[in-house]
Image (tube, rainbow, N blue to C red):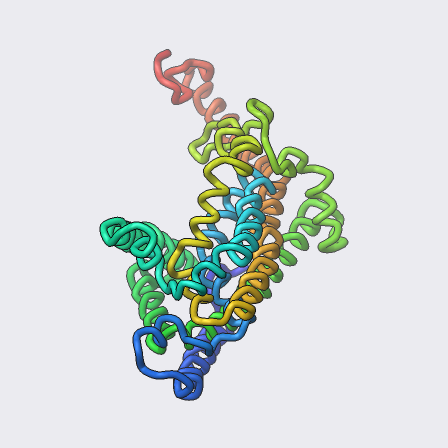
Length: 365
């Protein structure tokens, strides 16, 4: 098996780039004529986005390398419980559609600092604007570009910086036309994300069936997760119930990673979701340029798409976890045992005690 991208992969990637860029240019030259060149039209695409474009754009803005790398990794560690973030996100979108959006549109609110300025004063609006600006630059954008460039580096063999520069350049190209271009090109992005994620899930479950089971396919792989990964199939943990790898060679209580149900119902996570989907400029921006029925339909569509995320992000992590514990871990243990036996034989040949702490690498007590 050859690691890295092949010629066909590069060709598909180039075709994808050309399609997205060309479609974005077409939207800019055709849809752009429906509005003006004002800043409001650029940032909100007033009246130009359909409900399905709004919903797709919200999910495309929300889902990134953080989910496909980070959440899959946490599914490997914690199991299906990590999907609670996505499920709460869907509920938050429903609440925003029912209560937040009507208030924003009724009062002609187009930015969150504007809302704070009207509700309180300009000082608080300025504080929030500066805070979110730093958060976008040093947390959101940095982590997304880093994880995306790291993935491209591992897949293609190119250096990290060229991959990061490519991602930034590609992002700039598809945002030059404003929200009209972003909204409609995000539809293509979401289609690729969902079908690509479903393909990844299919391949992961099929590989699990092939390597661990009898090779009967995806349903067997899914059944093996249900039967043999009980500790990874709990949505809420209790203190001391399960121990999971901490990523540094030790173990940690799973409850410390995902506390009890109260954290999600009345705790900070639910507030965090409402803040993200209801008061986050680059999320709410997608809907604020539309009329209320269209905007609400867009958010409801985004909530439906959000429900797919555990399937396309969490299941591959679960399959990888089960494969590791049933296949790779025994192989690693067998390899380590062989190395120990060889080391013991060499030490005995040299007349040394193979059980001596000084010889087994643990130090002198």
